[in-house]
Image 1 (cartoon, rainbow, N blue to C red):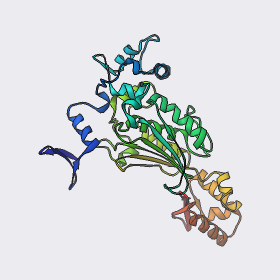
Image 2: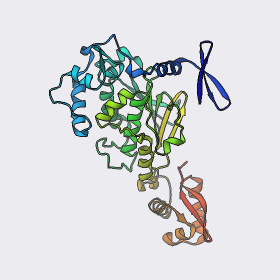
Image 3: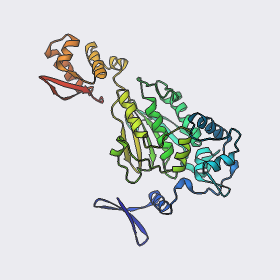
Image 4: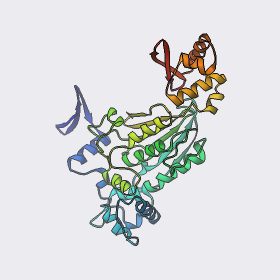
Length: 354
């Protein structure tokens, strides 16, 4: 990828494609050329009185647990902000308002997070909520809102080692939320959270950093945050790590929970992360109209990773013809998918559902 300017206009070349850089992307590009990032700019409209003391106290409690920064218990707000590089020549930086502001929306109107519950399609909006506040407040407030009004089974956002098999793995949801809050373009559109009957997604404005591809997200990759000051403060508080592992944690959490691989991709000028609900719990399978032996076969496949036609015959105590017919029904429903043969028997893994 190559960026250059011609007669006052800026362009990006990717392979043989040439595209003009405009709008928010142009602002980011020009800032980077000056050695600055958006969150490092002084916010001369703000003062220390615009900082929320309770959010500062929450950060201090969290950072004490994380042990990534040494801070005196009685440190003043101005000294703390200076230590975090959020204060310069008596002026707050934009990052300070995003992280700790009393009314960040007064400075950056699109800081809000929109949460919507949908039916079968994007047009079928059942209800929605809008959450406002600084990053420290949103970090906890979004989880509380999801549990109160959106998730069928509330999940424990503090219980990072626990996997919620009935709906979504908490580690994946938490990383998705933090990635969106830390790495979004705060001059762009509000962050949008969507819940459907079988998936949960978060979209935030701002694409991937230059040099990072969608495939890179599935493996160890460099950490290149859009908002390095915001990311650094969140690291010191223990909310994120600094090694580019957020997307890997999402993938691993879904894998550990037996869920399909998540979607992690650039979309419509921003970044989309989407995870899918576990359709393979015993309760979910029983209400989907399957026979008892089919439920047992799906649970076996979930536990051991695969099932063969011959193994189906064995655990269900049925003939090959019956096993073949049952498996065909499961394939038609998207619950099983054929991945080849083992010996003379077909092999199946879990599908993503229909």
